[in-house]
Structure formats: C-alpha cells, structure tokens
Amino acid sequence: MLLPYIGESNVWVAIDSAQWPFIHHGVYASARIPMLFCPSDPSPRSHNYLFSIGDRHRGFWTSSQKPPAEDAAFQSTLRGLFGLQSQVRLESVRDGLSHTIALSECVKPRRLGRTVPADETVAGVRYYAHGEAVVNDRHAVSFSDQTPSDCLASFADGRFQPGTTLFVVERSPGWLWSKGNHAYVSFSTVLPPNAPRCSDMETQGSLTPQSLHPGGVFGLMADGAVRFIADDIDAGDPSLPDRQTGPSPYGVWGALGSRAGAEVASLALP
Image 1 (cartoon, rainbow, N blue to C red):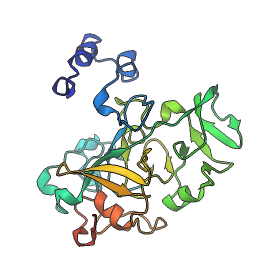
Image 2: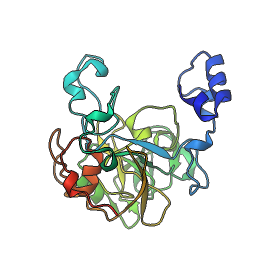
Image 3: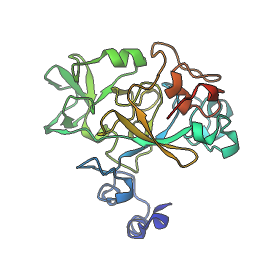
Image 4: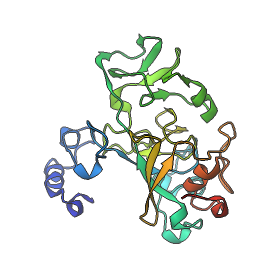
C-alpha cells in the first residue's frame, strides 16, 4: 500500500495488474526497492530492514481461534511497536518515542552454492526444508525453539555447532520483503545486536538484528532519530524468561524494545 508514496508506482502497478498474487509470486520476488537496501550490504536480496517486536522471545502468534486482531488477550501481551495484526497508537508508547526502537537491520545469509534436501547434514549441521544451503556463520539462522541462552550456547568460534539445524536461504531474513512472518521481517531486543539468530519460524525465537557495520547496528527510534547501538549494549540475563508486563529482564537493550515497560530511567544511550 505504501509503494506509490515511496517512488515505486511501477511495482504497485505490476502487483495490481497481477491481481494481488500470493507473496511468493515473481512480481514480488523480482522487485528491487532501493529504499529497503542498506549501502553496507553489497548483495541485498530483497531488504535489509526489520520491524521491532520488542523484548519477547515467545508468543509471537496467538493460540486462540479468534483472528489475532480481535484477540484482546493476545494483543495485550505484545511488547514492541509491531506485532501480528497489531495497531499501536503513539500515546500508548508510554516509555517515550525517543526511548523505543522501531526498526533495525538484517543481512541476508551467504549462499553455500548448493541446494540440499530437507534434513540433509552438511559439515555437522542439518538443513530445515529443501532449498539453497547457507554458509554456517553468524548470518545463518538456527531452527530452534530454545531459550535465548541456549541460542547463544549453540554458536561458538564463528559458527553454529554440530547438531544444529539451519534454515535454507529462502527461509532467512532479507529474502522476501513481502513475507510477513516474524522470522523474515522482524527483530527482537533480547539477545544483543549481532548475536546469533534462532527461530521456529512462527511462534518464538531470538530474532537478533545483524549488520555488516563494525561493532553494532543502526536503529530507528519511534521519534524518527537514527541511533548506532553497540554489540556490547547491556542486554541483561538471557537465561531469564520474557515478560508480558513490567520492566524488561534484558537490560537497556530490552528496555529499548518495550513500549510501556516503565524502564525509561535505565536508558543511557549516547
């Protein structure tokens, strides 16, 4: 809906002419929208920017039979500026617009150069689903429903450890801008920037923002300011469970993600 307002009327017309095809249709996959690219990524596939779902690592999807937008109990558990079928008014960002993060970054994983069938093992790691394998480094994504601390423990010496299951390229962030699943277009403020990223695709995970910038990522705050957020920002204790109310257990980084956690006094960004 925003495409005509950001100079992409041709893409809008192509989508409209195709009668709103499914999001994997070629009209979406072939579109290159420069506004969605970070200049530091030499080979973006689709997009480099992600929406903040705050300091949660579970409960991204409702278990109710109600449509998510009509499930008041589910909507009340969302902590960030964005969430499944959610709408957030500025006045509900009680921690302050300048203290609440809206967008950050991702880097599309590098291709390994071969297509693998589901469950094939390559150099000690399995691949989830059929598709093009990725290089096992920090831009890969682990298929996991583990806690944030377990996600951290699964990554060492620049790679995910043997026994880990990785996503293929087509199921990674940065691959398809029109795919609304959290694993494709969202980040969480649980593990610090450029830590490993683990996800079960739908309901939970440590959706860490990542970049090619030395030492951190850029974040867009809700007031429109762009801030550089260092990898060593205080991120609290990753072994603690996330919360639906109150201050974040994930330090200053978690406080940036919650829109109404009452942690404003703890923020000390330069």
